[in-house]
Structures are given as structure tokens and as C-alpha cells.
Image 1: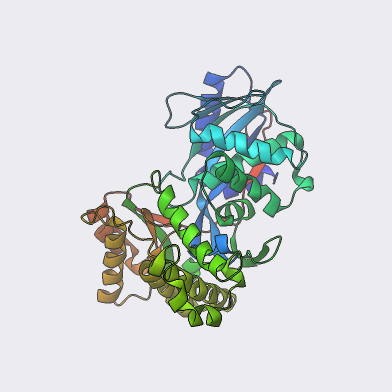
Image 2: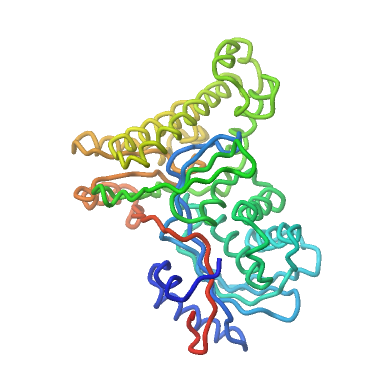
Length: 419
């Protein structure tokens, strides 16, 4: 969505030094000046762990950490991207088939552009310099943030916002991950990064139902944060795919496509017969998580609308317990001697109990590696940060705030700043 410069500046954290650095880099790399700038937030999954791919419900938030870029169009179909932290630029020629192999960034550009052409958008070449505070492996959906950024660039170059809905724009990122990266992702991440704010999403209807929610934990004296426990998601696609596969195997055994269509009481009656299917007992446990998690999401929506943070933290803790025990997406079991995610969860639970804090903790996002989500009283947050960073390293505790805007862009004026 294109916005006015004042709105853009207010939405982007540390706007002035970041945009200045990107403009300076652009001037060094290219002979033209940027035409526009784009910001796409990361996302925090509040509740609804691994429910979206079975047409369940979730609650997610856009966050203050974002991917920021300055962009200029070209006269051809060549794309050149300089990204902070990468010594070499990314080159993509959209007029030619993709060479193999390509970096994920190049595949995501190609995938998003291919999806957008289905909605009448023309492929466009561009120059860009970008940097991201949504770090890979942070569990804050760096990929969906970048996908939203690329979609906004192509939409800007086509003046195409009025031709697509938010769910349609979000699906371009999902398409890129599914078709161009082979990752069986759902749509939650892309919707959160595209829409902005905190939203309830019901995937059981088409298009997904989206309901904005009031969720401002700082007004209740609480700090939302993630803790990076170590490890990344690069080699965990098989673990994610197993969750997807086993839940769907239960649905298929019940004669339908997704668990959304399976009555919970009928599933419980047939548990004994289902044990020998794909995934065995673990598939049954994951299905049980799905049913209870959907109920918690509905209860979370009600509590958020009442601003009942006591109920919200109780529900978040229950979601975390279910993910750990039933969904089993905290540890792969490959290396029993190294379980950083489990340790981060356990230490946070210990902190909340011993300090008598009214907070919450749960695995965040896809799980198996990366981050946990925490809600800690602001009065205890510094102490909590010290406890966790002694174990997981400086900077491992990442405080978050909710960003009201999803992906946005602004035109660059004569002073080389968004106007």
C-alpha cells in the first residue's frame, strides 16, 4: 500500500539513519536515483501453532522489525539487489529461465513475480538496496517479509494495488515458497506481514476471514519478546513437512482433506483404528493439538476484545504446553545433547514461577529451532533479559512491539527522501 511520507516515517523504526545509509549505498552502486522506498514488517505468531495448513484459525501480529529498501525501475527485465550483509549483489533476469541453483532471494523474486502475473501484473526490472532487521532464523518470518517487499515493488511499478486484495497479495509469497523453494508453508506469515496490526485469521473460509484485534500488551504492563535459542531453520524442512503430512494423513483416514472437516468426537471414537496410519501415535497427538489449539484461538479472540490479559496469558501458556507435548515441534530428537529451544522454554517457565510473574511462554512459529515467544511484566523484563542472555548470548532477547501497518511504500521526492 502506498502511503504519505509522514505515515511511512512513523511506521519504520529508526527511519532516518537507515534510509540515509540505503540512499548512500544506492548512490555508490547505481547511476540513477531511487524512485520509491518500501518497508515490510516481520510477524509474531501469537497463537494458532501449525493450524493454518489444515484450515484452522490463528492470531498473528505485524511487528516493528522490518525489511527496508530503496528502489528504482529499469527499462528491461533485469533485477539487481544489494542486500546489507551480503558481499555480492543478487542478479535476476526475468526474461530468462532460472539457472540452477539460485539463492533463496532470487527464487523468491521469481516466484512472487510469477504469481503476480496471474493477476495481470507485468514483470518489471528494478535496482534496489535493502537491509532487514528480520534476521533469518529468528522465527519472525524473514522470508514472508521479503516476499511482501518484492510484491509491493512489483505492485508499485504496475500501480496495481486496486487490482488485488490483501489475501491475494499474501498468496504470492506463499506461491513463491511452495513452488520455487519447495517449502510447504501456510499463509499466516504472509497475511500478517501484508495486513499489519494484530489479526485473527480463519482459514476455514475462502478467502480467509480477517478480523483486526486490539492487542497492546504494553498497556497492561507487559513486554512481548522472542528469545533466539540458537540454530536456524535451514535444514528443518523435513520436520515441518512431517507435521503437515501427519495431520493430513489423519484427515484422509477420516475420509476428508483437512482436519477442519473432522468432528473431534468422531476422531476420538476412531483413535484405536488410526494408530497404525502414517505417523502412528505422533500423528494422533498432533491432531489432538490441532483440535484444542483452534478452541484456544477462539477464546484468545474473545479475551483480546475484552482486553483480559490474565486470560490471554493463560491461553498462551496452554498453547505452549500443547505445542511441546502434543504437536512436538520443540525438538527434532536428532541430537539429544543439544535442545536449546526446550531449555529456553524451561528457563522462562522457571523465571515466571520463581519471580511469581504473571506472564507467558510458548514455542514460536514453526518450531524445532529458533525462537520462543514470551510475555514478561515490564518491571521484570530487564532481569529476565539478563538471565536469558547469560545462557543464549547477548542480543538473544528481542523485545517486540506491534506495528499497525503492513507492507507500505512511499514515493521519493527531490530531496531523495520519501515525500
